[in-house]
Image 1 (tube, one colour):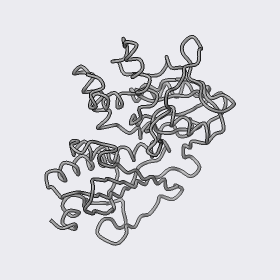
Image 2 (cartoon, rainbow, N blue to C red):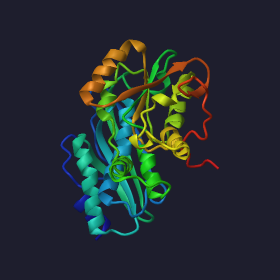
Image 3 (spheres, rainbow, N blue to C red):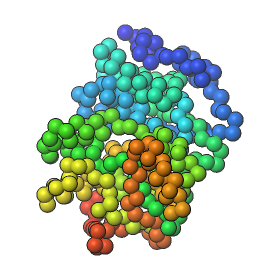
Length: 320
């Protein structure tokens, strides 16, 4: 199968909202008047971001999901994407399953695949995603204000706990195993939440590298500090009756594990009722975990107010 046969067979779909899609030297797009274009790129590298034997349908889903999560954090409506693949070999079954997982999520969010590239090489997957947001209404990292509540959506640490299970650092019972592996392999980007938070949240970011690492980006960009209560963090149920040894794993998964793809956002106290309504309508916990204060850095506190020492903040590809 040639490169162009591969593209036609697995990655060419109708693009009714695109002036010109797959098949030319470049795509042609028209941005809706009054909108800004939000653009983000993420790369997933085999052996670094995922195991090489990962189910290809799940991998197709996650490849797009991590990019959709970036648009969710900006409050942008997803519109278009490009996909670049480096493949050791072109296996029909793998490509069929991968493309089905990718397009199922794309169709759920109205995303059109408008181009990309393929080449032979180690397994690498890269998506550039584009979305629209009304001018001046994008959620940013730089808007947090002293007095804001800090909130996170969903649960933290499930994906990291699923990875710990795969690495045989912990053995999960059946129910917890299914939940945590689903969180790791098929994360659900919070696109609808990001749209709902426009005009309500002062700042937002998606939790990809770990809560503390990603919250730090908000703090640095906004020139503020944070007080976070560890006992308020939404943790996996598996940790409810954890041993002392398990507490160490729990803290690492919840604070620093990454791959959650939940939204961490700040909002003024005056918007608490509206946020409660959003949580109820979406059937999605939006847990208040702390507050923005003046100063620098983040203090993690126990229920009694004592400061908890942080072992690590999150994942960094180039940390020594």
